[in-house]
Image 1 (cartoon, helix red, strand yellow):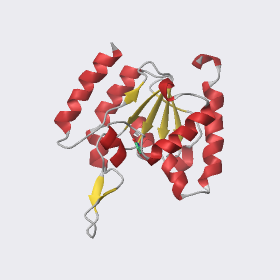
Image 2: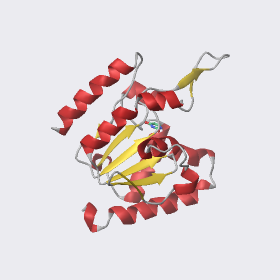
Image 3: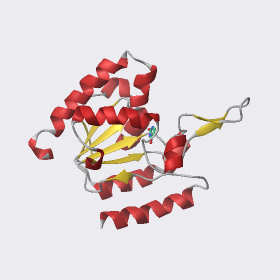
Length: 191
Ligand code: URA
């Protein structure tokens, strides 16, 4: 049922965008829905979220939480790879998604959340936090590691794992937040 609904929903993506895109992936009955920002090159190539460098960070995330990838459903706010072209090399480089790109996919994300109906949504970084909460004023620096609520759903904002690579000072905070999340998902309601 959920799978059929998702597949129907994902057919809409092709009409929204001309280029290559990826969909969400994982266990449709998962209690935890992980929402990232947008795919990079590797994700587009393999048509799977979080399989490039960011996927390595995700594995660390799963290890700390002591859960398996099969226990999650994983998606991104933006389903295409936001990129620009390096003038010198001609190669594509990632860039953050624009507001229009986020808006283009916001209904798809809302529907994905409805279909999966998880117990908790873990947002990674600012883009999914703002989009899932439908509030552009929220910042990850202010609300990371706190339980938020939106339409009867629990939202747990984490820094994006990639930001830890660029800012090692965040690592300790990120690990503290992950340990908080671990406690939350180990309470009865999640078993
Ligand atoms: N970063 C994201 O936010 N999502 C991916 O799928 C890969 C990297």
